[in-house]
Image 1 (spheres, rainbow, N blue to C red):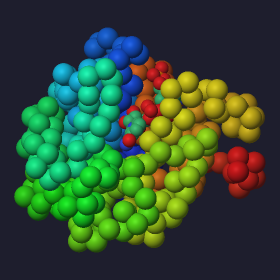
Image 2 (image 1 turned 180 degrees about the vertical axis):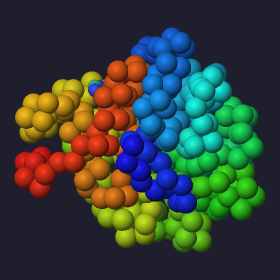
Image 3 (image 1 turned 45 degrees about the horizontal axis):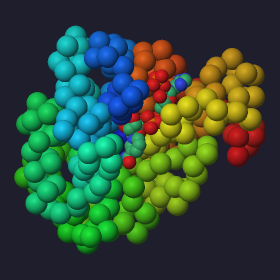
Length: 282
Ligand SMILES: NC(=O)c1ccc[n+]([C@@H]2O[C@H](COP(=O)([O-])OP(=O)(O)OC[C@H]3O[C@@H](n4cnc5c(N)ncnc54)[C@H](OP(=O)(O)O)[C@@H]3O)[C@@H](O)[C@H]2O)c1
């Protein structure tokens, strides 16, 4: 697969978002999840995005990380070539709720828990999941910097950050901010300024929900469906190729819970859209 860069690591231009395999009510059984992750890896995916908070219930934190670790352990390919990106800073509350905790003491605990869940000595890419309004951002990112300095994490990223937070994080990390993960898709384009800041700083930008989230097909009607029909590919491939064309720093992480969907998405890495097609897509 065509590659792009996160920090000092080359990864396939399309990653796998593992979240749909740990969502209550939509979760496949473990065998299907492992088949999905193996299909992605066999197709050349070398970036898997997970988080401690991706879990079907608040009392099963780390569900998705353990799943990814198990699938990797059962895979016969080169595990060292796969970058597992996890996150800390979101908490789960009973009844499917989400909260945030950006305190340094909490992030340290969360990182230790993720190290165990992933079964590694150092996390490949650790992303702060979402700013906590109750904690100064500098303090939160300072905790991530300390984890980086101590070697608990190999690369540091942030998520759900605005342009000023991206610049703050880059500065506090001493120029070592490797990635920013924000929502971006044809129906959610308000992360354009963040993509521009990432391009300026040479930081990877990982669009989350790149297909518009669950029920993606509905949101990709209109020009995406038309270009797809002309090219004989899926609208999802056109969508991911459109994101790749936005900037060389963009690395989409489409979610999947079935082998078919991630195999289809991976093909977008080889799909180059013409200037005319890009103009049609807007
Ligand atoms: N940082 C954050 O705050 C944050 C928030 C949300 C998500 N994320 C990350 O972003 C990743 C992606 O987001 P997402 O999973 O919410 O949404 P998404 O990638 O926009 O959509 C995923 C859904 O689209 C379907 N799909 C994927 N590829 C397809 C294809 N080629 N053809 C048809 N359908 C396809 C999948 O179906 P099947 O399930 O049937 O395979 C899946 O349910 C997540 O997995 C997670 O890692 C991060």
